[in-house]
Length: 422
Ligand code: EPZ
Image 1 (cartoon, rainbow, N blue to C red):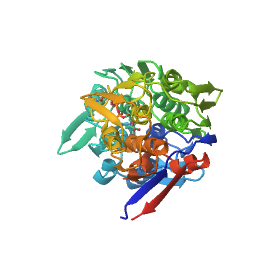
Image 2: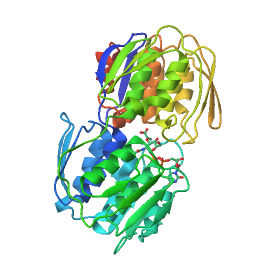
Image 3: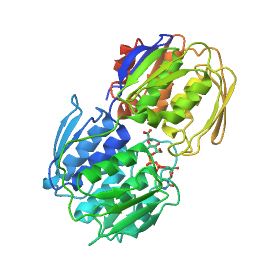
Image 4: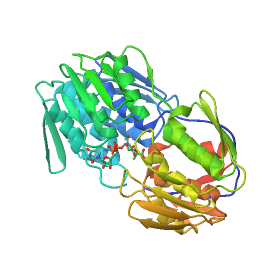
């Protein structure tokens, strides 16, 4: 396959209005949950990204009939023709959320064979809590030679105590519990917006999920779920944040519409602390910035703390702030690789295990850099927007996994970004 590079001529001020797409992490969860429905299911506001394409391939492999209209963000899934319960390795390697098919297939068909998932290389990503949760519902789960095999003649609701807050683990147990007999209670559950969205989707199909958005979620399983009306997924919190950071990074004036401002509080607070101006309306956020930004300190945390997925774009922005910033990455072990790439652009960074100390420089200069994962790619786009000269970003396929038409959106605001294929 020809290698694609993204080229960015930096120094352009971003200005105007841009609309955010549907959420990646909610889309992959809701699509996997569509196989629980006895009736065809219509999902709207889906982003046109590679992870959604992989989800479509997964459903088709299982035997579902899928109509995917990327331009309308609309998908219809008819799961009545599913005739297998395994997900192939090449699909699992391409998407972390493949693990959701363990919970969904187990709930619907009483069995699942799914290889251990891949996804972004940002540190260790075990699924022991997912498995523990399914075992608590009575499933027999084995892992051998990189394959997870789950089987249950019947699932019975139970108590699941998560050892740590895990987004994927919470989602997978919610899926498995949706058709279990009785009530499942997840303690120490994740509270991220896409957990609430998945709960709303399951409830729209007749399930009874309560407490999503708090750390105790109760799921009363039902014997069958049926989609009754189209379901639109929530806007992408991380894309919204990336665009907010891009606006600040270029000292621009950008209004991001179609977003949910309350999902953005942790980032908004830090941008204000840096000296940017942020105004919120019901479904829009305007970010303006004039003059130098102040250095800040932040730690990544589970929601509603500062999201790890925005740590990379935000730490890229801090490379040009006045003073020394400290960033602590508490969720994943290996999420500073973009900063090593940015050292080629003149960034001054020291990394001590999970802490990055960033000494702001007045200007970055263009260089050839490599995206090592999705949000590292977004961080390098931010860096390219700020840098003098034309930055070249390799491995753009990472960016396409999770951002819909990122360069088109930024170009509509005045950026100069294009791609070339070698
Ligand atoms: C989800 O990953 C997101 N992916 C990630 O988005 C996001 O970074 C992450 O949540 C944290 O918010 C999707 O939603 C598809 P976790 P997930 O389970 O579910 C440990 C992006 O850029 N853990 O909440 O894999 C784990 O090692 C991405 O969009 C266990 O030890 O994250 C990590 O340290 C990348 N055992 C922590 O918990 C388990 O069984 C949080 O992981 C599960 C997790």
